[in-house]
Length: 344
Image 1 (tube, rainbow, N blue to C red):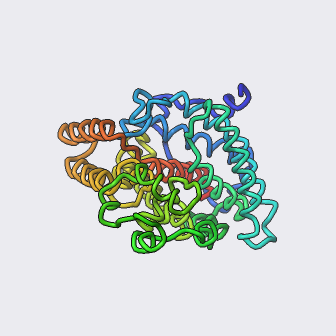
Image 2: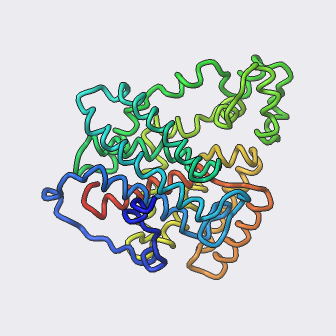
């Protein structure tokens, strides 16, 4: 752990505010080593956790809606995953001759081991399970493409590893409320529309005679494909995060850019973590708050900061946490760091 800490130190407040960009000459950019990619991926995860205020999410001085984790938990988790991100890049480099879908089972095996490392570091708390999937794909994609690629190519290549994953992983499940009504005794689409998915899980599991993950419950109740769908579509949320980070000045003030980009993601993308915790009402509330906070100026105005504080308090009361947006944000930060180093 001490060696990892040397490679990926916790960012200082000065670093968060002054991440200066530059435009290197791309034709002279050397291929980035797997170790360096692992370090940048870890740094991206820590930067996302450090930034704040982020409604419902952990940051330096708040646990958000989470009683079982704080900023140090996220730092320990990110450092524990550095080896996995390094391995994912090396895997992408070593398998360029293979068809992308044949590479994913190997990456998934590495990811399952990484989950064990995460849980060991956090004493059983799920901090980065979604990020293991998304950021692992991008590390592998960078390894496959080599140096001086582009955001568009990285998103496309990351998606190519997992084409068809939703159909494969969810083949035995009904998709959406109408299909669920036919397949599950006692399932009422109208009641389900106003219920929290977590409360509906026992009924769904009993009707299907199997255990269900939160993502599977969301798929059944809403027909939402979650992170699998985001991946198969070419990671539009991640591309949006990278673009908005730079539009909001990530090279000058990373903290401001991160908070404003989170609000943009909340206002525009689907987040299955929000649905899981808050149902349709919580999801709609989060979108409305994000749009209103952006319209008020976000962190740049007194009204915007007031709205951001109100939003954070409302999320905590309702135990809302936009974990899906957080994963897109961290992956977008990774792409931004690659651009700083001339590799994207």
